[in-house]
Structure formats: structure tokens, C-alpha cells
Image (cartoon, rainbow, N blue to C red):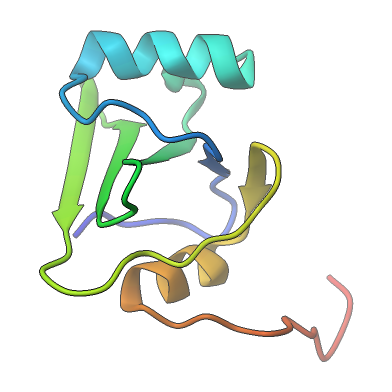
Length: 109
């Protein structure tokens, strides 16, 4: 697994993407959908139409990298209406299959 710092931005794409896309296709999608580039240091999350596949594109030390996961059963439950940035804890729960009803902070950061 890759390391995600607490200051990293995690961008979620709400629309399904063709999972045949590689580095160039996903990088172009990042520019088109998020108006930024992968060199900025964010993590860009893409799902397929059935939501059983996930690809994460990010910039590693010396170039782009893709993390890919396929679920044998079930699907990733993420119901957002727009492309957005989520927090690290939301992303970890998404990968683990946890769907929170509310995320309440005990204190302000």
C-alpha cells in the first residue's frame, strides 16, 4: 500500500472512467476533471461503472504511479454528487468497505 500523509489531497472522480486507461489517459482525466496536474502531489481516485474497481493515480518520487484494486464481492460505496476532495480517513474507510453515516470531529483543526 502507498503512504498517505494527513496533508495530502485526495480527489474523488464522481463519474465512472474506463479502467483500460493508463498513466496518460488518467493524467488527461485529472487535467480535464480537476483542473490540476498529478505533479501537485495529490491522489486521484477513479472508479469503474460497476464500482468494483478502483484506480488511484499519484506522483511518486520519480514519476507517476497507479494503485489498482478489484473487489471480488460487493462494490465501493461512495455516493457523492460532484468531483471533490476528501480526507484521508474517509479514503481509508472507503478502501476498507466502511460507509459512515456521519463524520463528526471532536475538535476543530
